[in-house]
Amino acid sequence: MSASALPANLREDAQLVIDVIGEKEAVKLDYSAESVRWLDGYIDRHRGELDAGDKSLLQEKFGAYLGESMRHNYGGRWTRTSDGEWTIVFDERHQASPFALIAEHLDHHTALTQTFASLPKLALQRQN
Image (cartoon, rainbow, N blue to C red; front, side, top):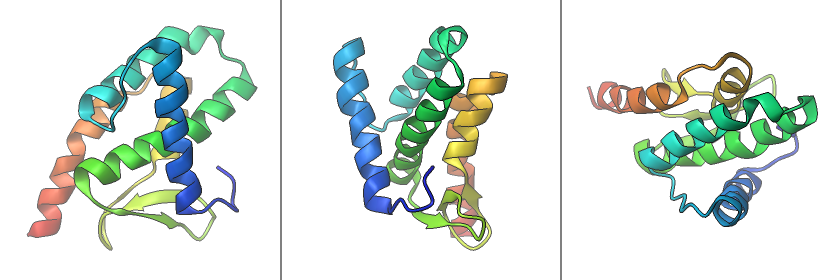
């Protein structure tokens, strides 16, 4: 993710995923858990076709989409860490790194859907 990006640009990248992937794949993405599950499968289906440039682009765009999905479902806000990485911060103790999660999934087949589904636990912990 570009160090110069702003949260508005991240939201625009997420919307770009909705528009482009939605049209290309005839799917309605809406930041829901089902949309994240679909994105997880999309990565699985196309992983073997991706070169380093493709992965970098998908990490940037899909990371923004995943982050916006987190915000829409579980709250939080975009914040840049001291090393320039954009994360979703839920509170002073809980955050998620959507770009790192996408990179892990692209390279190592991590469980993106399961990770997303576990985020409500953070929301419950915040309330206590």
